Amino acid sequence: MAFNNRRELLFVYAVKDANPNGDPLNSNHPRYDEETGQVLVSDVRIKRTVRDQWLREDKPVFVSGEAVTLKDRFGELKEKTKKSTGKEVMGECIDTRLFGVTFALGKESFSWTGPVQFKWGRSLHSATVDFVQGTSAFATEGRQGTEKQQRSFRNEYKVPFALIGVYGIANQCASETTGATDEDLDALREALWQGTENLITRSKNEHLPVFYLEVVYEPEYLGKIGSLDERIALVNEDGNKLTNDEGRALRTVSECYLDIHSLVGALQKVSKQIEKVIIRKTDDIVISGLESLNKTGLNVVEG
Image (tube, rainbow, N blue to C red; front, side, top):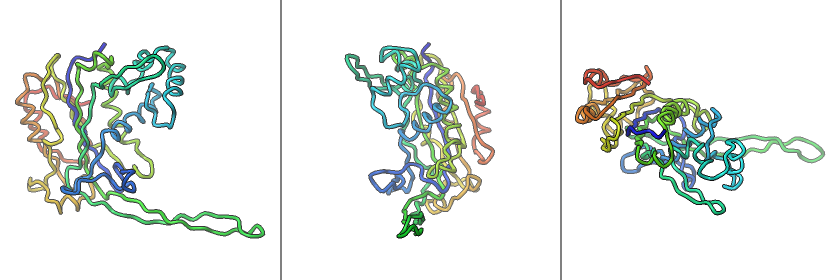
């Protein structure tokens, strides 16, 4: 049964000595706002993290990340799901139920707008991008069977540290078409957290979830606060927003405080429309305003 509670999501995660989201058209340089110094992460990268986690859990996922034709992937999923039509097979895939799909194969074609959409993520502070060079050595066979060593040089980019905020929204109206359920949204929440912990490839190592907040509205409510990521800020021990230099100097989560007072104020303005607020956090960061959230009278639960 499709879900009928609109939701807004805020996810904050830390990146250390890694490349959050390289741009293949710019030598894999981390996506970057040159004006503000903020690191950027596309919504596609966020969905890739989630999908990879679902694949680990052996959930049916349409976009697997492998280079495969639509016809071949559809054939694989038909066999796995034991369904026949495109809509039936796509209805079995959790990523198409939540993120949508455009399908055109043979005589069947349709397009689903996904009920869950993410903004591009941004670091909550100015960050530094380092250019790193290294060497690789490998053995080759020389004349008369002698072994020779060849060396090659590699160039790469990394971000010493960034705390990135991601905003998403789940639209119950679109779920009527895709069939996305409350259980799917629970799986999304878990995949965001666990999937980030499981980013342990060479370029994505040291990605760690820090804070998650989900607003679950009363059934059929059609409003929203919007851009929850813009209602939080990193502050220093004096409570002042970090300067650009202070932001670039950060290297660990414990060196700053996450201030959510503005977000708490926004939640209070629509408190009558909120069914519950789900939160999850690590012990590594101090969150200023969390006590205020617990005193609002809202139904705050850990998830």
